Length: 296
Image (cartoon, rainbow, N blue to C red; front, top):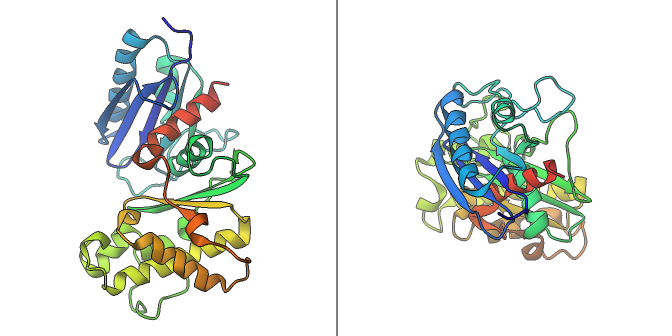
């Protein structure tokens, strides 16, 4: 049996948990998809998966959890490792780290799904060799993470870039927004549920000339310019279901160039604002990156 460390990887989502075991990022040795039901049932299924793989591949060296949030990621907090107040029914205060730590007695890496994905992209993807980079995911919610000199940015909590306040598009003045905290913040205006609330379908279902494309691009471009002003990232990675809409990313790049008005110099937004190089694997590989970091 190889002496190369074996890592457990978890991409914890509101609909499903994707789990895997790997020794490196080139391939997962085994994976599974587990429906997100109750915390107890979901985590029991995750633990059963890892126990079954241990029999075949050997003991785990560490586990990484890249999860939907918001999360308590402050290791000084008595609630580190738990989900904070979330709209996902039954998951507020759910302890993700505790049951896994009890079952396997290995180091646990724990962070948001977007931070995990950013860490993975910095190691193996679009943010390699970038001293400052950000990652934005746009789907059911909008999340963002930042990395500076190889370290994910945390403070009193993880960044909440989706709750940035945005300037209204002239063609979108009446919509109140769907964020239950802020109404018309970025998440309230440009997330998947916000799109469906005012147009009755997702962005990919609308014709290319539908005004929704330009409205959503305008809001997301404001986040790009805000990140440039605050962090000066060399690369901004944009993923998530809404970003799968054909033609949306070029519209965001063009609007970011328009909104920045040349202030940040001669920026080629097609090179700065990019999709994830790791594609759909960035979330699970985020779990791997967190596990490797925890196991050092």
